[in-house]
Length: 224
Picture 1 (spheres, rainbow, N blue to C red):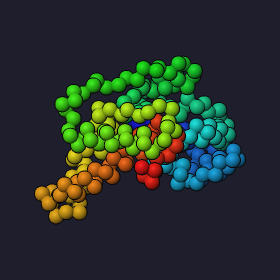
Picture 2 (cartoon, rainbow, N blue to C red):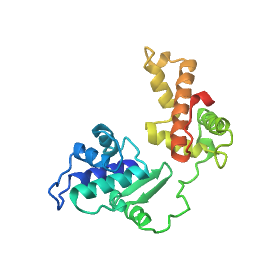
Picture 3 (cartoon, helix red, strand yellow):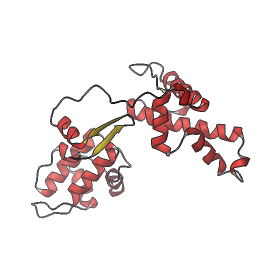
C-alpha cells in the first residue's frame, strides 16, 4: 500500500471510530467545518480524496486534521495515529517501510538513510525504448530546472522500469502500444509514429511523478 493511501485510510478510520465526546462518528461536512476554525478552507470532496489516497496532504494539513478531529472527538490525536501500526507501506517506488517503523519515525526515532533499493537489474534486460526513455527523463529533469535542484538527476533504467511497472502494471512498450491501439483499428495497425507519440506522453507523466516526489519546483512541459 502506498504511503498516502495508508494515511488516508487511517484518517477515515479515526473519523468514523467511536469517541468520548458527544460526536462519535464525524461526517466529512463536520470535519470540513471544524478545519475552518484552524484557518483551513477545504471542501468535503477534497477531504474524501485525501481519505481515498488520491490527494497528497501537506504536513500542515495533517496537523490541522489531527487538531480538528481531536477537538470534535474530545480526544487528543497524535500525528503518529495517521500511520498504520502494521503492514508494509510504500514510501517511494524503491523504498518501503513497516507500519511500526513509520510510527517510530514519528516518535522521534532516526530515519534510516540507507534506501532499501531493489537489486540492480542487468543492463541487458532493458529494452532499447526504456534506455532511450531513461536518457530523455534525465534530460528533461536536469535541463529545464536550470540548476534549481540541489543536485543533478541521474535516474537509472532500473528505477524507471520499476516506476513504470508500479504505475501502469506493464512495460513501457506495452503501455505505449495499448494507448496507440485505442485510436487504431487493431494492434497490427499501430504505426511507430503513433507509438512514439504515446511514449512521449508517458515520459512526461513519469517526469511529473518523479518531480512531485523529489522536487519543490513544479515541472512544466513549457520549460523543456
